[in-house]
Image (tube, rainbow, N blue to C red; front, side, top):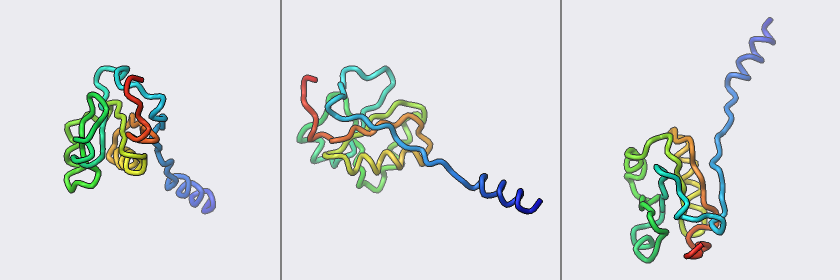
Length: 118
């Protein structure tokens, strides 16, 4: 009986880590976003001001208020994230998942891989 209890407790403690979907930036078209989707640029404001995808919202990954600035985005919204090359957006997508967001897509390759007019 004790082995069954131990097995049950071990199974209960297992957590399947949610992962964000990944989409190469080259395959992404900003004009094809569905209604209610959010395009999130997690670069710094200076990087954002140098150029960004049409319709993107800027929330700096390095900002102290990153989490609180997400509060206006519904947890079930489809969220597409990008940064310069892909590192910050990967970490930000993990953070969003831990905060309870359920539809997170990391645009791999980042803004450097973006080709206007796609």
